[in-house]
Structures are given as structure tokens and as C-alpha cells.
Amino acid sequence: MKINYKIICFVILAIFQSSCNDKCEIKGIEVSDLLSTVSKEKYHINYCDLLESALNGEDKDIEKISLLHFGDGTSYDHGEVLIHLIYNIGEDKYLNAIKNVSKQDRKRLNSYFESGLLYGDLFYGKNLDSVFPKLSKFLQNE
Image 1 (cartoon, rainbow, N blue to C red):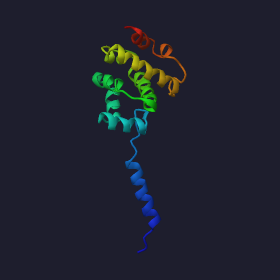
Image 2: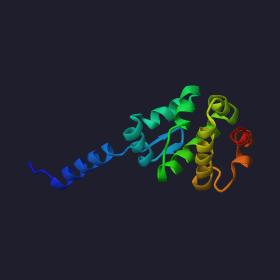
Image 3: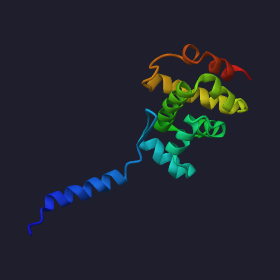
Image 4: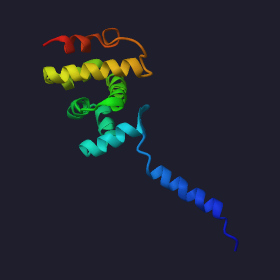
């Protein structure tokens, strides 16, 4: 019996590579490896599971995913995911879930939304006021 070592090496490499991939897609929303990995390391949560619950309309999970703190490139990815979340569940549902957030949290959310709109693909280059006017107004209110 002749063993093909190239095929065995390829299979092992494919298994290893797929086990290291934290990237996921939930209802058409792509979550980057970076965002998923940082969420696991920093918060000990599965970002994809949390997103799925938020997309199913769970208010506590909508608020929880919205209030996660990220910096650098991760904040851009998170902002893009939040824009997709709002688009999918609706502006009113989202607002109801975050209605009790603090002034400081509103500022952080606004920053995420700006990044998500600036660098994301859904409403590329548009401003929050034109896409989600109620949310924009809510974030500006003290």
C-alpha cells in the first residue's frame, strides 16, 4: 500500500487552518477573525453567538454587543457589524434596547457608527443622520 504523503500533509494543514479560523457569518453579517478573537480574549464571549442572539431580537444581547469596548482596527469591524445589526432588526428595536445607556456610552456608540459607515459596505460614506435619523438624534440628546 502506497501512502501519498502530499495528500496527508494537505489534509492536516487544512484541518489545522480551519480550527484556527474564528471568522463567521451570521445572517449575512461577516464577523472578522480579529473581532471574534479579541472578543474571546478580552471578554471571554463568543461574538458570533452574541450577534446571533441580538439579531433574534434579544434586548439584553443587543445592548451587550453594542457596549463592548474595542480599540484600533477592531472598533472599525465592530462598528460595521453594529450598522448591519441595526439595519436587520430595525432602528426602533435597536433604540428600545439601548435606551438606558449612559452619555459616555452614547459617545462611544457614535464613534463605532461613524467608523462602520465610513469603512463598512452597507452604507459606505453616508452619515448616521441620513441612514438612521432617530438613532442620530438619540445619541445627540444628553
